[in-house]
Length: 262
Ligand code: ZN
Ligand code: FE
Image (cartoon, rainbow, N blue to C red; front, side):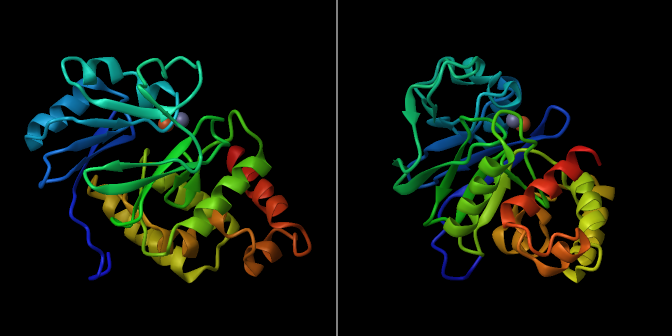
């Protein structure tokens, strides 16, 4: 994070389920606290109690159960505002404020920009706080990975990742929803084996995971240097895949299908 970033919020990341991350964002001035997703009501409430923070907002990224199943338990007895995607998918019932691409809203005095990034699901939202230089990318962008494409198609996912690349400055801190990094780095090396930044990062990730420490958050700069799903234009990857003359979208599609079969 740069010295000049005016970050005023506190961030608490915690594990739930087998490999999910929840995050609480707290503003000490106003006392407001936002939860990113709500996949496990008990885990989120325990995290709030541990920090002594009171829930005021929930930002829902997408309808999948590991992001929404705890919402009713989490907000019971609070007057939290629940912001998230439109739609009638199971999991979205508790949303009180529906958002779409280009919307923005204020949380504790900070502007939150809403980016639709469909592909993994059609309803995926990412939440970008420019003044904090933080983005919550849900199951769209992971450390050295991207979400499996369930509801959309590969060109749609490539558009979504391209949108993140064109919107988020390199110093942006990325919180994603899963600790998939060890598996992702193994795959990344299979398509980008000579990348020195990737080779170095593989060692860092192995050390962190051997101590059961999180590899998240990451940064846009680290992802641009090491995430093969953001590197469809890289000439070494293109040469490795024998796709020198293909479009970036076609290179992305090849990388994504290799990962599906890795
Ligand atoms: Zn998901
Ligand atoms: Fe998920």
